[in-house]
Length: 412
Image 1: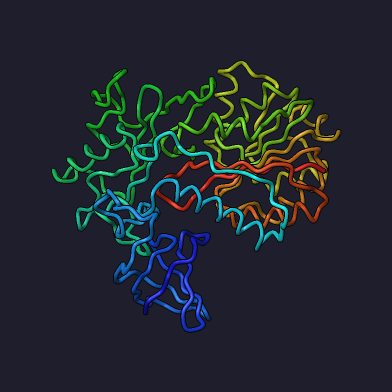
Image 2: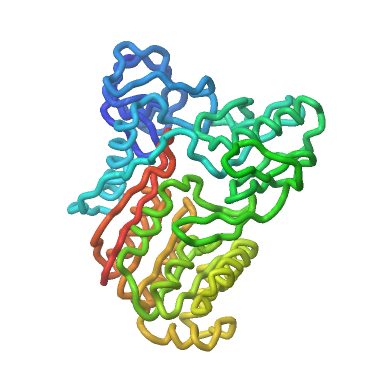
């Protein structure tokens, strides 16, 4: 079957039509003329892979990574960087039009990464101890693609991967399903611990010196210091974090801000410098602990973090069951909230979370999302609840992949 790729869809697939069917093609570029192999059919949609590139798209480039096509980590290396940015902007618009039913989408562009390669400061590597493979899952499977060099890893993490692979070859690597690593200002945290691999990095060098392998680290972002470790969620692209923080908070300031899914406090600290009272809600115990430590280290006493499921916490607020909060925060929730900032996981916010947000009637909402589809789903509910979009910003936190970070501001 021969087709021409029309555009890139949410999920990163190329869209084509043939014989009355919709065809979604992996690893395609807009304008490609392709010969396809149909892999599976679901309803009226066929999922296909490329057998031959008959006429390449003007946006197509040769992927520099030798694992491209097997490794499931990157799916946009076949397009030049400007085409990647354009595709991500269209993915966001497509979701807002189709899923949120928004016709008048505010103008926006995707802010490019300063370096579309070697940017990842956090990684998770899968380990197959039986077959002696260490890397990432292959696309569409749970098989491990054995990766010796990753084109999007920061140099310090590439060095760490190489040392793990040396231990694997030598038979001394601990047996586990995966390894996680994150770069700090002065060291690297690895989970689980690996004897003989040090996280400590000399200033001005990518090489490591001997020491303990698992520890908490400090990351300085936009003038704020954050405590975390390899098991914590943290954005993987440091270079765009200052712009992301500025976009999420904007010019907002006032008496009370509520942050949902607050994690280790990426937005909590800068919010606490803008608002008289800040309340963060985070279900993960270790992340909430790190956020409190970072607030204390910054001397910010006007913010607190509740370790609760976000939906349950909002239900408690609705019932005025605020016994776990300080007197000041309980009092703050009795008045109108100036800003609610939420940064949910890829699955988006639960329906009861959106209902809880609407029930609090904040003056402004800032929604930070890593998935345009779940963002659009939740925006539709917020708009139905009486809010309107005032601005959209987007950031290429994940170059060489179809993923994109979006920030949407809404007012009542």
